[in-house]
Image (tube, rainbow, N blue to C red; front, side, top):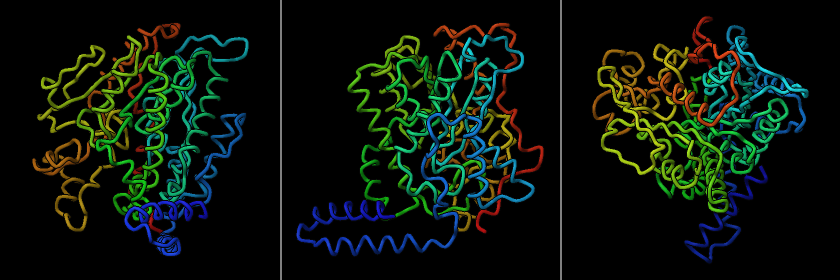
Length: 463
């Protein structure tokens, strides 16, 4: 809290000096205290930090199974939506995980007991490891040891993201990468959204990483002023888009403004590292949507072409009108996303790493993303978004799409199998270790099913 007060004072002092150089520090402190008192007025526990999940305090040599166990215990103490029926399932869904190579795999373990290849997967901002589990199952089927971490501030209550720093996220990913290095001969790293940003950060610092896998990576915001503006805005509005019901067990619906500022810090570090290093020689696979409204696809494309030097690097770019796009970089493959017969307008940020058969976010999944509608002021549209399967459109919640009719945010990738096929080709091209038998079962990505025991959508977080 003291650090938060200091940051507010520093920010307000800078703003007040710009507007009125004569404004006293006493007045600045008064304004800061007013903001602090307002923040303390949070009535619902989920909007306050739990005190259990804003830092990464595990020792570097903590065994990964111990890390998973202790993290699950913390989640169990911090979450407010757990009851007898869903407790174990929710905790398992949002916790860090380990997947050992599929039973069909023939692999060698060296004298040190290391697997042939391993990958660390990192989830996105406000998310949990649930969102990278499907792609984890894909890598498991390709004979990888798979591990995923939980970034501090995530998987518990939205309030835990209020005071987290990017340095704590870096500590977590450093730990995860160290654990994979200790368990696998060949090390890969992958991430979705902010997880992709962090994976890239590690890629710039560790040349021994064999490949970097990115899904909807957060390379830059669509507006260049977003980062600087949010650095001030975070002290004026804690929740970027207001308080929400948080009915999605796998990620927060309520978004801490300060957490986006920490993402901006990682973005800036990556840009600085890229400019200093010049070129990243590690092969990179990236899959993203050109119509993404959460981050800038154009900036990702420019970054890819400018800094990713490996000729084996590949980008899968989903676009509603691929014929209108032209790039000089032949490593970029443009795939048509629009399918009006299937009522799909384009692909959303979250859809890329999720298969259609996912029990929560998939085509028949229990969760319907309709946060762009006010359920009170736009009750009719909100209800149609949640329930009308015949007339609703799927895609990003853009003004253009919403002018067409009721839109539900697309939360799965209709072309998921094609994407993993492209990923297979990428891995083969960079000379990944032979899985052995060559007769390895394909992973659809929907094997971790929560639906069998009833829906987990809509837990009573407000209690």
